[in-house]
Length: 418
Image 1 (tube, rainbow, N blue to C red):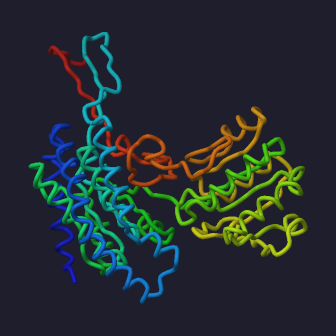
Image 2 (cartoon, rainbow, N blue to C red; image 1 turned 30 degrees about the vertical axis):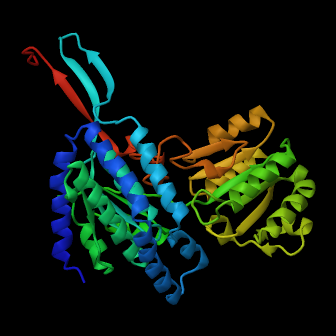
Image 3 (spheres, one colour; image 1 turned 45 degrees about the vertical axis):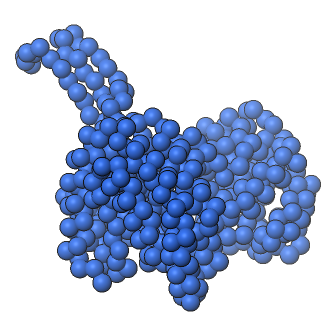
């Protein structure tokens, strides 16, 4: 068991490394990323062996099918990690970017430029790919990172951190730039949340229970990766064949992730035509359907939806359905019960589409597209650090820019204020 003093020691080491990283050139940071992209395929066997240990323990512990799917590493997922690293290499370095420049009447030249946040703490569960995504984005943006993954992925995360450290050494950057809290003791999380002298921000990724605990107990500012109670609303003017494809993709393509649809809202005028066709396809994919009374009058075998269902993120092959009287009721339902993550309308009405985009208060809103696109890679950001559903300091998929702050650089010629 890690002594709690070790948490503070690692946070301090990361803080010291952040000073070096903030001055590192784009060439140096990309050298690290390229070294990592070369090393990950070579370490596939050891990474899969470590992951196998985690999966074996997780099955003995009775983890759900959804969590086991999130925990699993495969050769293809390691190749996806490599592609993510290569994408970040190609992204522009945000550090030093000139955001705004103004010459004042008194002759002062004021520039607003982008700088690193500093030291970032990431607390996450289940998904080992978060270890790589977090590290590559933080380091490319000039930040050091302190990682604390879930106990269910301890062996996988340790193995990935070793690969990261080898790549840092090869690139001539401080290995202390990536710190890993390798204790499964929950007290280590509480200790990390107290390191406000060393950490500039905490980013939690995981269950709502974890996120709420961190928000309530952290002395360090928090940017929360919110849960995804995502909706698809099928309007009365929708192309029903296209709507069927969008609903099916949003729910079934990967149901265990936060941008998967959890709720389907359908306009009353087309419900009797649309619901039987989409329900048939969803049931073939083993999706459990829950619904309001109107839905159950159209479809047999639908589980009654409770009030809790409208607020719940399933992360599973479950979909709750509600029939609404129009776009206004759909928007009201989403803003009342949704998690402000990702919501979509399927419509051929420009007026309804624009109203939906304007009035739905979510980080990502869509017209005629699946919610599954809310993702750093799909948005052209490379990998992502998470998807923020809050409004400060970042919202939506968090890429390189969201891992920076700003500095005002002011040049004068001896001016004094009168």
